[in-house]
Image: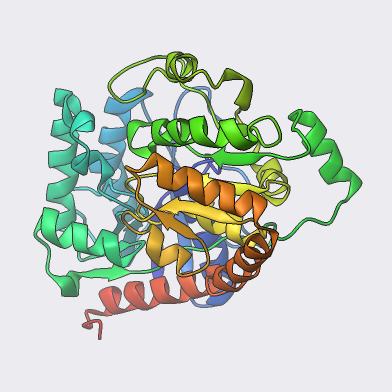
Length: 384
């Protein structure tokens, strides 16, 4: 079987879609000897060639225009043309951006429907047009993969697809996420980001649906009790502009009068993320909409007590191994954080349960279940 994969996110391993793409390709390539993989890679002006390609995986590079229009042209025209040129048997688009027409059977992975479900993300005409385009393309795909049962239900309800056409396949995390080892390299990483001895960590995006404002509100309660001992570390690229999609965090922190308890550390290199998790005293992920919620699994695999919202897919990922709280109740969130910080026996229980829960997810399983879908679609068999 010759599989062509849309590699738009290949050189973006800091994104969830990039991690998913790389891990899937690496494990499929290792797992199956009679599977030929070609990455259809879009190269915008000035951008490098695809990096860290697994041995035996071919690349087919296509020059593309920069910007949103160039992305749409690649997805809708250049990618399906390339699938035909490389004589693929089946195509996979590992994010919500499939072509309306494909010369070969097509599988698309829709991680979540956040851009459709959050009203603020639909205000711009370009966003509404793109949502309409990718919705139509998903309805014309041979099969849809998604990251969780919650996302599967969203896709069935919002896109009108049948349950038989959508398969939920969980994601995983790499072996680099594990409990701390107190190595000199890890100490250097902590120093690099000027991290305190004790801290509560948020690591993720800052779009509206990430619900970081509720976490900040919760920290008005945490701060009164423990803020000086356990500051809130906000990791990830800080928004440069304020908009309906990105709240004015600095102003909100000033209004809440918690400046002394909050530390921005900005963008974190992918290789450094595991260390930040390992040495946190608690990890909080208050997001309202997640297709899966990789940071939660990364934190549990690192042996950190986790507090997350009970929205969307997150309860599936956490199980009973973390604190699942209402994303609209900052007092409840604050109580969970304080409990994880001051109740040592309870925190240890969360750590052990988190490690056990994280061990249930593996990229090998993700790849095997994905291969089952691809093989069935390519051969025209029904998935049972």
